[in-house]
Image (tube, rainbow, N blue to C red):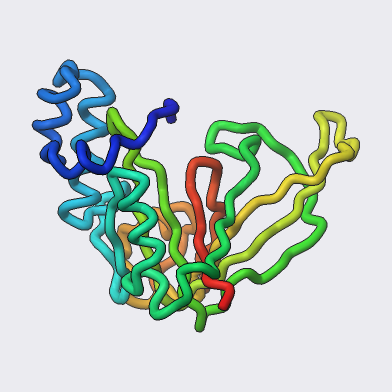
Length: 210
C-alpha cells in the first residue's frame, strides 16, 4: 500500500468521490492498477460491497472517511462506537513489521482482551485510492485482542524486542455469507466456530475506555 495523505477537509468535501472522478481529477490511466483499485474502493464505500465481493453483514455499521476530520468525526460519533466519551478512546495498531507481505515468525508471549463481545469498537482499514481513504466498521459479537509476540529469526532463536499485534475474533458467524473469505480460508461454514484474524499494519482499531 503506497503512502498517501488525506485531502484537506474542504477539498475532500468539494471533490466528487467516485471511480470516474478518481480517473479525471487525479489524471489516472483508466487501465492502471490504481484506477481499478479505486473503483473497488468506491464500491466498498458507496455500495457496502466488501473486498471479497460479499455485502455488509447483519448488524454491521460502516462508513468511509476521505479526510482526517471525517475520520475524527466517525470515531467521535455513536454510529460505530455507540454512546461514549469521545475524549476516552484508545487507538490500537499492529507493529509496522507485520504487514500482509511479511515473513515474520514469532511466538505468542501475552494476550490481552481489549474489547469483549459486549463492547463496541471500530476498525478502520486503509483502502487504495489516489488520496488516503479509510473504511471504518463495527461488527457485533466480536472480540478485540492485543497480542505480544516474541520475534524469531530464521534459525528459531528469540529476538530481544517484543512486537505487538492486534487480533479480532468474530465469535458468531451465523448469518454470514457462505462466500465470505473467512470460510474459504478455514474450510468451514457459517455458524461453525469463530473466525479470527490479525488486524495488520495499515489498519487502526478504536476502543472506548470509559
